[in-house]
Image 1 (cartoon, rainbow, N blue to C red):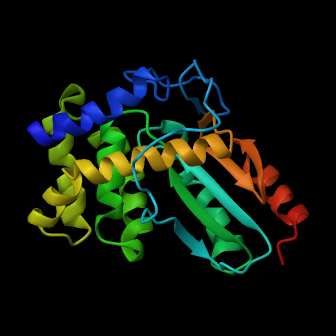
Image 2: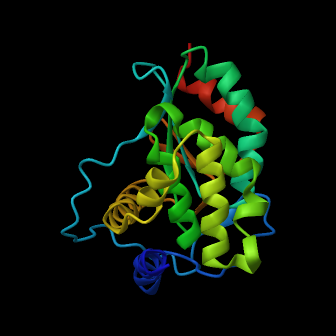
Length: 228
């Protein structure tokens, strides 16, 4: 429990600087869930946290002419909707056919989102997207467990980890890794600043940032960017 609170503190410190919206209500806008209303983000974030070993999670063809980056939060309802629908179409049409290089980058609104990210990365890149699917499919259960009680949420996340084939000790070590949590938060800050991310989900297609959109519009943009 103390380690869970420590990771919550990591996120809270960043929230004070205006990076996260803690205890937010879900957005009613169709475009996505906004980050903090104070979205004045520094262009140069000084930090002594080394993020060089934080790995991008990718699918598809790394040498494809089009790169699509999704910025999403595991606690964002709009992101769960995208994962259940448009992402499946994107995967079928462009990722599985090696027409694009797809990158998924986590956004953090709250402590549970960080724990979910730590869990998704726990078993390595091979299982990351499978665990991500499980997290989004059961988002309403684990993210609201016990009235959003940290202990209840942790217990639900551990169930997902076991379902993905991880043992209890491994799961415990991953979701209570405070140093890794700090790295992930810093990693998010750097990339979201570079790509001007203000809501989730957001997409960067060959360097241009877009807000949430219908799949037909995304397909049009990917094709125009040169997907083959």
